Structures are given as structure tokens and as C-alpha cells.
Image 1 (cartoon, rainbow over the protein chains, first blue to last red):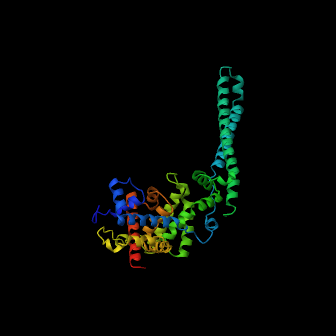
Image 2: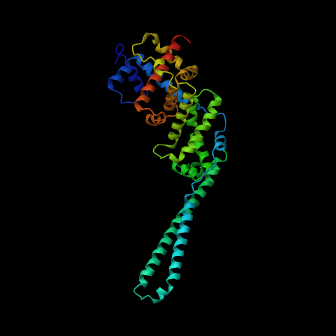
Image 3: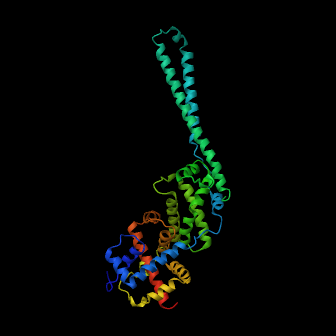
Length: 162
Length: 198
């Protein structure tokens, strides 16, 4: 404490805004000292007055002004890219199977039954890959569908704003 | 109440939508944050036309930088930081310091004469006067921009020290110290005005 046993301004502010646990000595001093308690009251009044001030707001419609200034939208086409990649991959696998079958048709005919499981295994792996890709695509599709669903609410909320 | 009235997409959903090309979602981000941005711009920039241009620039920047937002802070805090930096850059470009030597303007000497603000009873009566708010606002406007902004963000927007520190890119301790000085300066000015009898 300074100034003829008055509290420091820091102590008064901390007490006024409840920023620290009030020391018993400080609380006792504030009970007895009109000077310090008046300062604390003034700080509280200042804070209350600032808090009660009406919010400053722009005097123009910000949303349309900003939206008009935005660069042309460049949507992230991740799902579209995935779709293309998946299509290319599926086509590639099918072409490979077809080529293999076309070129080695005679070989397959002459092949003993020992090699058949390996061939069917390759085909099964390809089919599995195909299934995984389709599952991924379906997941993307459902996510997009959910977004579209919630966009309806979004548009409703924005009707008054934009 | 209607459930739809409560619907408020999270920061992450809104950002994802904007990044997917949904500009209406960006409109919603603007609506949610423009109050905070307005407090910053109003406290830093006095000219109406400049405020208008800056507000738009701020949100264009937000749109362009949105893909760099990593959700490490609240979206509103991140946007407020961009708003603050944009205002600072603007003021620096126009050779006007946002700090205006706050240390020069504020004498934090604890040894000032107490007796000059002695009449506490009179002060309490005056506190009840509606003029108090107007005078306080007037004195608040006279503070350096950084002080005005900190006081507004803390006491009006009720942001935490941590959030304010993120916005103005200052350590929390500095934010507390500046706030302390700003309030002290305001208090001294008010006491001086009331003791001079207006």
C-alpha cells in the first residue's frame, strides 16, 4: 500500500474487477477508507457504463458489399477429382483384365487347374478394389447430400441478411 | 421455439462450406463476426469512408486466407486479428501511429495529489448523473487507439485477456498492463473533470 496507507491503483482495480482473490487486509481497508472505496466504485461504474454502451455498427449492409467484391468462387472439387480418379482406375483395371484375357486366352485354355486360383485371386482383388472405391464414392455422395440439406436452413437464415 | 432458430453451424462447418464454394456460408460468417470487427474498426479508424473500405477489405482478406485457418483459435478471434492487422497496416501506411505514444499520454505516477479528488460524496452523486456516460465516452475517444480498443474488447465485448492477446498480437501481460493504464487514465480524467466542476 502506498500514499499514506491508501491502496495502490493496481490493487483497487484488481479488487474492483474481481481479477484476484482479495486479501483480507485489502478488503478491510476498503471497508474503512472512503477514498479507496470511492475509487473502486468509480472503476466499477466506468466498466458498467462501457459495457452498457450500444454497439457500434456499420451504417451500410456489409454482407452484399463484401460478396460483390469476392473473387470468382473456386470450389474445392475434391469429390469430383475423386470421381474422375476412381473412374480412371476402374476403367484401367477392366482394360487390363480384358487385355490379359484377349492376349492370353490360349494360355488360359491350356493352363492347368493349378494356375486358375491365382487368376481368380487377381480378379477378386480387383473386385475388392472396385468395391472400396464405390464405397468411398457413396460416402462422398451422402456427405454432399447432408450439406445440401443443411444449406436449406442456411438460406432461410440468410434471407433477411443477404 | 422453432428448432431452426437455434441452428447455428460451427466454425468448422461454415469454413468447410465456404471452401466448397458456398459464398452464402461466407455471408453467415460475416453476419456472425461483423459486430466484433466493427468495434475494432471504429476504435482504430475515425473516417467513415475509410471504415467502409477497410471493412470490405478485411472480409475479402478473410475469404482469401480462409484455407489457411487451422481452427487453433475461434474463427471470430482469427477474423478480429485480421481486422486489427488490416487497420494497423492502414494506419502505418498513412503515417498515423495507432499507439500515439500511450506512455507519454498516461502518467502512471502513484504519487499524484490525492486531495484534489477528495470530495467522494460529491463524486458518488455525480456518478448517478446521466452525463457521466457521455463524458466517459468522450474521454474514451481521446485515448490512444490501442487503449480504446483494449478497453472496448475487454469491457464491452467481454473477451478474455487471452483472446485479446491473440487479436492484438501482444503478450497477455502487456494487454493487462495497457488496460490498467487506460482505466487509470480514464479515471483520472473523470476525477479531474468533476473536481473542476465541469
